[in-house]
Length: 287
Ligand code: PAF
Image 1: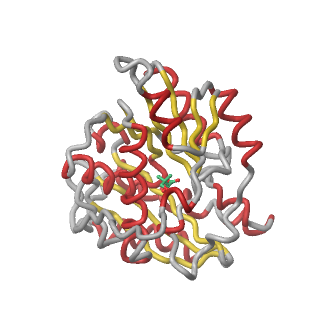
Image 2: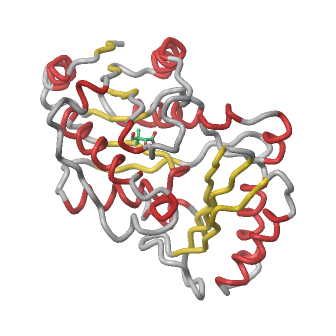
Image 3: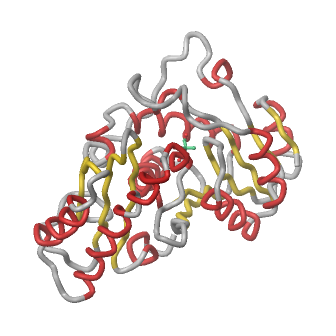
């Protein structure tokens, strides 16, 4: 496995064999089984696999956890090596945002709601860095996790609108045995908060149960899920949504599919989770 912090080295390796297929897994490091599942899928579907590790300041608001975001490069590299990555790109801020940098990629519409409403500068940072990584690596396929569902909707929009020449693949959320979605931010939780954090998946699962039982009223679904979160004393609801998985607009009535999603503060830690209905494959059209 090659590890580099230069664009030249990435491009040299990428174009050694122009017909080879490349899978890209962009990450902010502090890897867990969710990230590794993306690397394994990329390994199975491509000749070469590149991962990137970069904590992108442009996607954090000044009030957010950029400085405390967990980092462990040595452990990340060992995990990536085990999972079969060929190349790891670890740029620094001076390389990604050099003096004079003034170009940002902004997706409108689908960034206005949910995470975008709560974190107004977040997606501009995500799409800018993802566009840069796509241009640097020029992958055949890019692998993103369902856990950040809105990020996948926004990125898919950017790929289509800016004609990036790659296949976009969304892989299922990996969960702890008790349902908590894996996240690098779970490390912030104290033991009582960790126990309380299952409230996100419990609320969403309650919504899925109701959908499977025939409930189609958006407000009824949102109220039932909100009640689960309200019953957890350590949790404070940020938003809860039953939306169209393509437009992310809130649904008055559920038709053929829905995205249930939530953001909840457990202590000071803000956690997000989602469950697509009837399935991830159905709402992403198989990708
Ligand atoms: O999902 C993440 O970890 C980040 O938003 C990404 C896609 C690596 C861009 O910084």
